[in-house]
Structure formats: structure tokens, C-alpha cells
Amino acid sequence: RAKTVGRNCNVLFTPDMQQVLTRRRRLETRIWEALHAQEFILFFQPILSARTKQLEGFEALIRLPDGFGEMISPGEFIPIAEEIGAISRIGDWVIRSACRFAATWPEHLTVSVNLSAAQFGRNFEADQGLVDVVLQALKDSGLDPHRLELEITESLVMERTDVVLSELKALRDLGVSIAMDDFGTGYSNLSSLWQLPFTKLKIDQSFAKSWRENAATVHPILDTIASLSRSLGVNLTAEGVETQEEDDLFTGLGCDQLQGYLFGRPLPPADMAAFLISHRTPSLEATTFEDWSSG
Ligand code: C2E
Ligand code: MG
Ligand code: MG
Ligand code: MG
Image 1 (cartoon, rainbow, N blue to C red):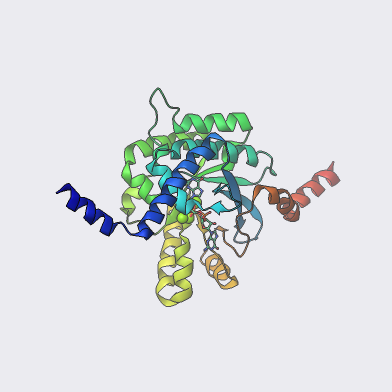
Image 2 (cartoon, helix red, strand yellow):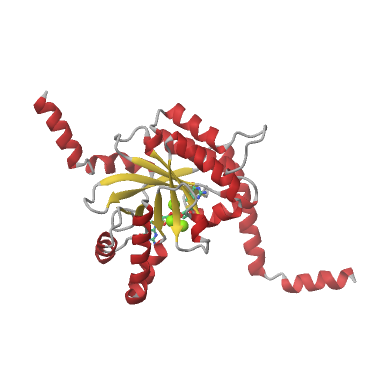
């Protein structure tokens, strides 16, 4: 009997699946390896004011070097890191590194960090809780809490609302901002979603894409999201802005901030200095000038 099962397995176990499993196992090993050797890298994508097109901050986006000169995207390795229980430690590293980087930028710029569900509810003895990790990262880097934004998703919140809620409140009390990322892709209960203390909505990039394909259907939905965010008093950011038409659309809808390839792809750390120099804001220069001329 066992033999029959074995044979069936062999029949079902195609070379394709073998490849998938091998890659998966290699990725798991690579994740632990990179964690111990501190080989993860943060890229930073610019976030601009919709109205003035001035640089206002960056989103930290993690990359995993595969060891052969290529980067593995978080879309591929984050779900695996979550499954194998590595995401909390990776996430703690992201928070600390992002704060350390941001502390070297001009002071008006913010940094946004993506969180995973497993980073919440860790307040038991063996483990430092999320709030402590953030507090420590702010202290060590000297970054003003108002310059740190943490991004959560609808699904993250809906899994464990109570734990997440109390930690989010504690983070807000520190002065940290909270953004609801990928908004419009989950199927959450809107009225319970709005009990959460977030300060910004990020419209998922799929909306920009579907608007390109079917503006007549998608425009009223975007308009509704915009007025919803206005009446609830939260900021609104559009993600995945790739064309001038999308810039016009989202700016016209009243979005506060824009993010997307039109304004910049995620930058490797080595390119940050040059980018910051080329994006010195006129308002900064004006302030400096006024200070100088009045003093
Ligand atoms: P996200 O937080 O929604 O980040 C935006 C993603 O859209 C990024 O992909 C970014 O490179 C991409 N993007 C930005 N502008 C455009 C555009 O104009 N067009 C298109 N097509 N794409 C654009 P990335 O870097 O591959 O990250 C994917 C996701 O992985 C992120 O989505 C986030 O959910 C997750 N992630 C990234 N870094 C971290 C991290 O440090 N921790 C955790 N837990 N998740 C992370
Ligand atoms: Mg994000
Ligand atoms: Mg997003
Ligand atoms: Mg996303």
C-alpha cells in the first residue's frame, strides 16, 4: 500500500514542483543567512507633496541580495520569512536601520516603514515588544518620532484587532504616524477599520492601473475614497503613480502626497546622497535665506 502511495507521489511530483521546492528551500536558507550576516538592504522610494511636488520623505523597501548579484524582491521573500518565523527579527532590523538612515537626512523628511502582523503582540519576556523596539530605535538614532511613519495593511489589522489596536495607540502616543497601506484591496469592515488610530491612507497602486484601463468606473471610487479621507481627517497618498495623467488625476482628487515611478523608483542607499542634493527644496533654501538676511 505504501508503495502505491509512493508511486502516486512520484507521478504527482513533477520536475517543475521539484524546482519550486528547491528554490523555496534555498530562499529559506538565504533568509536566515542574511539575517545573521546583516545582509538585507533598504532601498528608499521618494514621496512627494502632490501640490508642490516637493520631496517630503521616503518609504523604506527591503531587498534581499541573492548572493549572485541579484536582488530578491520582498513580494517573494516576505511571505516566506513570515512562514518560517523570521519576519519579526527582519522587521526589527528594518525599523532600526530606517531610523538610522533618516536621522542623516534633512530634518523635514520622513521615513515610512512597512510592518508585518507578526511584529505585533510580542510583549512576552523573551522578546522585546514592537513599541519598545521603536522607542529604542528612535533613541539610538536621535530621530524625531514625528519623522517616523509605520505602514500597516487592512489584513494585518483584521487578524488580531485588539493587540494591534493597543500597540498602535502606544505608538501614536510616542508621536509616530500610522499609514493604512494598500487601501482598497482588503475587504475590511470600514466602520471597525476607522476605529484605528491611523493618520494616512495610501491608495493601493492597483487603482492607478485600473484607472488607466477603465477611468469611467474607477474615477467615482477614487473620488469616494478622497472625500472619505477628508471627512475623517486623514491624509491621502496615491501609490504607483507612473504617468503625468495619473499625477493630474490624484492631485485633482485632492491627494496630499504622491509616490511612484514617475517621481522615482526605490533608490539603493548608495544613490541617496546624490538624490538628496539634487532635490534640495526651494522652501529650505528660502528659509535659510530669510534667516540669513534677517540675522
Ligand atoms: P508596498 O508597501 O505597497 O510598497 C510599494 C511597492 O510598489 C514597492 O514594491 C514599490 O517598489 C512598488 N512601486 C512603487 N512605485 C511604483 C509604480 O509606480 N509602479 C509599480 N508598478 N510599482 C511601484 P516592492 O519594493 O517590491 O515591495 C513590495 C511589498 O513588499 C511592499 O508593498 C510591502 O508590502 C512589502 N515590503 C517591502 N519592504 C518591507 C519591509 O521592510 N517589511 C515588510 N513587512 N514588508 C515589506
Ligand atoms: Mg508600503
Ligand atoms: Mg502599498
Ligand atoms: Mg503592496
